[in-house]
Image (cartoon, rainbow, N blue to C red; front, top):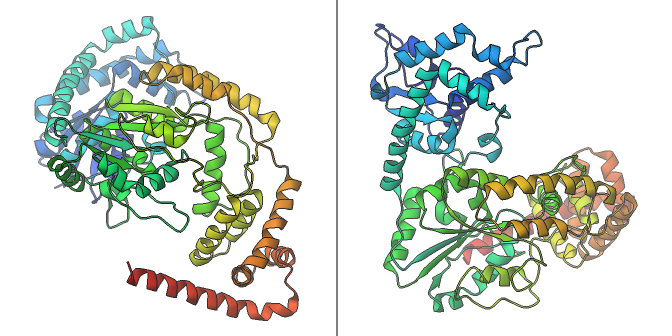
Length: 555
């Protein structure tokens, strides 16, 4: 006898393959989901699964056929027109047989490709499993839809009338299931209280805002605004309130922690505070759950020029994610973060306040004053605030990129602190040649036109201004990058000889002779001094470990 776990019934190109891939890959526990045509399930075989195990996944018929046609055209031998394709008798019969076999009263789950985000959330109850964070790149990885003309649409509706009838009935049931799911799982906020969640996203000054809020938590409490405390590293950079809503499973995959979130909201509801304020750029990766379970909340989302995000993201990749590749200017660029939240809010309603990360568009001419403008009564914005988590200088970027190739976590952490402090006094620069900016701007303007149409709560005039007012910062040629690289090496040698020794020791151990010689000469270290570098590296590691131990003891 065949043993079934969960079964999805679907027609070809309904999107069920992607749905199954995401649910099985990102479920916290291992699950088995198989895809079947209805004719293979509803038989007299003794292995037929129970009703509780059967799900149905549908797609708007003309979209399904357009997707199938797109895939068929990948075969060079395929010559049919779209009309010939959907008019094929076998294809029509396949649809008719499927719809005739499916009994929507005998399935426990209905998913819909046109409502894929809601379908994933609803699947958690059916699968009895919590989904962990799903990368947006996988969530929205779709084949470009073929535009279906009114003429084709009308003919498809006639030829596939039974499938459209099933689709319409399923949408009605799906809508009912979604309302029940939201009502059952909604985390309610008490009357006359407000929850405000700052989503970031990354590279929009979240560290600066969080440091300011943390310093002034007592003043916020006086205004009946509760901002939960959180830690920060030596440079003042933190993940904000991330851990107040997000937990990790046994495989260290992040997931929205419903119970922890509900406990926080319940405690807030019982308190004397009027506003609960949470901030983390990592919340951006959990929008599905935040928008669904906290639909009473107000969300703050900053929009930054994609060119600035691109370069800032590259810096972050070198600083935090071991990137070793040189920067390369792309031929195309997009409002990727804005696209994500726009697509999600199209399907799941949310109260999002869009702000613009640009000095000329800030309300009050600073990020802090602009953030304050989101509230009716807030703390005063600081004057001459120190920049946090700034981009590296050109030389710092080059050195860290090298060290990422051989350095251990201890070395990278210590070097990052030093480079971060050094870079704070250096001017901003760009690695994108001025002659490349024009083409990128034109493509962004075309994209902005579409985004204004599908993001109704966003100020389209300010989005246009964000692009029109963009000022390209000073471009650094390769020669200028090398000049600053030598400056960094010279300054590092004089301010932290132990750190220099650790860099050379680990580079030598990695047998990267070319990089070792380049760094040795740049640091001005003579051959006779090399015998001491391993001892210095050992000493620095011991001191680092002792400092961590003492810090933990006095926490």
